[in-house]
Length: 224
Image (cartoon, rainbow, N blue to C red; front, side):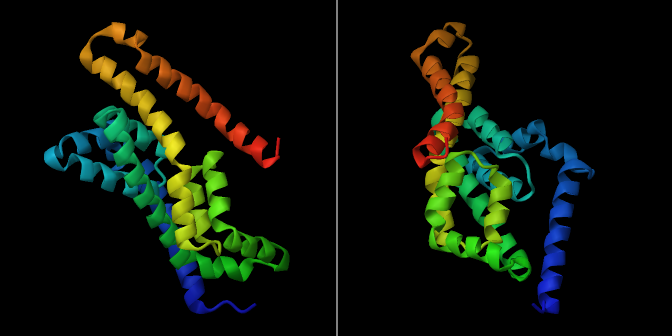
C-alpha cells in the first residue's frame, strides 16, 4: 500500500508530539510544575476558578502522559470525595477525548496503512463493537492514557469510545476519589477518631473491591 506524503508528515508530527510531551514533563525546566506539589499549587492558587483550572489541568495532563492516578489523587485531596469525583470525571473525559482526537488526526491514516489483512479484521471488529470493547477495557483498568491514544488509532467511532469511557471509568474513579477524599476530610478535621468512621471503613472496602473488579469483569466475560 502506498503511503502519502501527508500521512507520513502527520505521523512524524505525532511522534514528535509524544516525544515533546515526555520531555516537557520529565526533563524540561518546567518539570517541577508537573509534580504533585506543582500541580496542586496551580489549582489551589486559582481561587474561584479552581474547579475549571483543575479540569483543564487534568485534561492537559492526560495528553502529556501524566498518570491519571496522580491527577485523580490531586483532585480528591483538594476537593474532597464528592466534588473531587465530579471534577475528576469531567477532566478525565476531556483529556481522553483530546488524546483520542490527537491520535485520530495525526496517526490513524499511517496506522491503517500498516495494518495487514489479519489485523484489519480486528480493527473492523473494534468498529462494530466499539462501545462494548471500550467499556470492557476501562472496567479492567487498562492503562488510561495509552488506551486514549491507542483507540484513536483504531476505527472505533468517537461516540462509542466516549460513551464506553464515560461509563467505564465511573466505578474506579469514584472508589479512588472517595477513599482519598475521605482520608483528606479526616486530616482537615484534626479529629483522628474519624479514622474509625463508617466512611473510612466503606472507603477501604471499596478500595479493596476495586482491586478485585477487573478479575470479576473477566470472570463474567468468561476469561477466568
